[in-house]
Image (cartoon, rainbow, N blue to C red; front, side, top):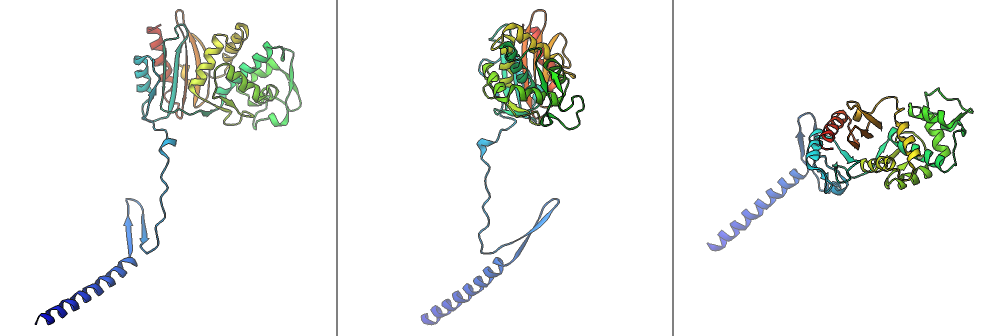
Length: 311
């Protein structure tokens, strides 16, 4: 009797295993339909190994809500800057009181250098006046415009014609990139980068011409350069003043200073700006880089209001 029961159990177990194997084979060759909100796709399961998903390197990603504030920054000003810039953009902001070195604010959620365009003219101007100071360029210097200098659509300057350096500087500040390219070719990018280093902008580098981007820099480097020029670092007072006065030739004020009155020396483009603002009893430098410029005007006004109250 016991043998009959044992044989029956073995037969039942074998039958169950056969059914399980058949079901497993059907599952492996079955089709699963995945339906999403707008799209659908079919995934066929089989014995082949699915491709591995490459995970992003977290250290290479800069998050908009990871805001870094330099030690010693004015807390009240820092708070206001963060409120204005919000959390929907990457940005760098630097503010420096030019009369009291202890009063500053450096706020950023991006630590990299970024491509900029017209703002790089600041460094080219500094290099031009540095060479004038050394006697390597003079008011009588003429530069012939080459075909390689030309920017499509610009008609102010003619290929093969020589123009005085003062005329080219003015044309550049009024927005002519052909003039900027001719000046940069004469001065040389390596010289511009060398002068940037002298001003403290150690991470800044200009491109070979003023095609986008014209170079790479950061808000911190822009602040060091503007402050260095204001203080006569690398340039004597006479030529430093010439650089700042050249900034007043800019055709359109950067958004950062459009709501500010007083003595303003500024340069900027769609993603960056640098400015020195002087009043009766205050003087400060502010710079910004961001992937969005819709907050620039409000940022400049906020910083200016704070400076007037805390000079």
